[in-house]
Length: 360
Image (tube, rainbow, N blue to C red; front, side, top):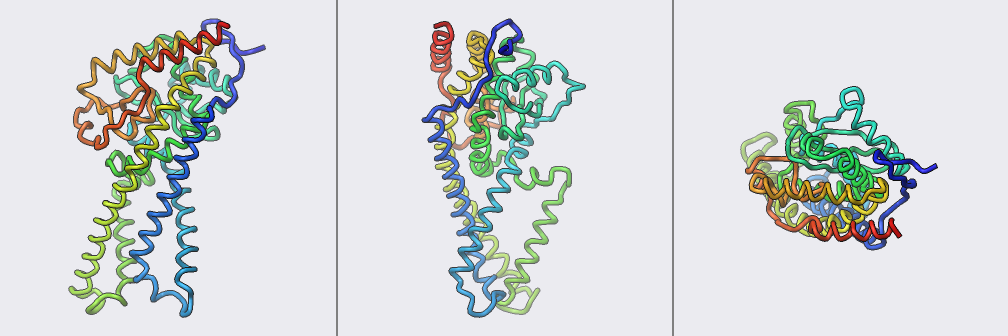
């Protein structure tokens, strides 16, 4: 027998719901992530090559070494994205994981709805803010659904089910994984979160120590190429000048590489929202609840828009196109004001089509 929703609607287990257009855009976003990593690694390798060459075996082809290094380091970059991007997003929005003992109702809902999608129940996290919103990060094997306290307070039971089903659809389609990965570079460029804080959040100041050790190692490696004696004023000054120029160039490169990522991910975001609305409505068997949730939260957006950042990179991951903050200073972080979501009317029209399909 098919599972039933809380209001008696019967719906079957939902399989993958991504359409061909969404799949193409996801593939393009992944290709861009890989390309950006390759370019970043190659640029960094070009800058540090003169410092590394003295330590290579004589007669080693530099092209071969460079190629192997680019492939290896790019692989490490991608693994780092996969491992730390989700943690960075959660840290950026201030989400705290909640247990079944403290939030039994939420866990019961997400477990029931995850069964509709044939998914392992995701980790649940709550943001302590009255701004109503939600997002999902990760993939089918390891995911986290984030909701705000305001979302829980503002929505009815059926509307909350609809929003949770919407987020689970992102996990099922794997577009949550793609968006999480693709959002890393733009988020870093906008200063929305720090990779070092995400990697070692519990070690206050540890990333500064690691950075200092890294600079020391680079200095030791660079000494054969520097003028003056090791640890002398001349060599230290020259080293710091090179490092400063490298960081400046890296910042410019980061901004240039982030621009196409922003455009592509926000195009992907607009498409994936419609697909997730459809899948969430099918999973609950109640498109009206999804439409009602969108209207309710859109009204909240209009009443609080002056307090929110509506163009931040991470807003593209959310149910509605704003983050979880009520701090007006967040607007200063938004440097590329590209629309991240379809209009409310487009989403409601899409749900009317879903309703007609379910009733036919």
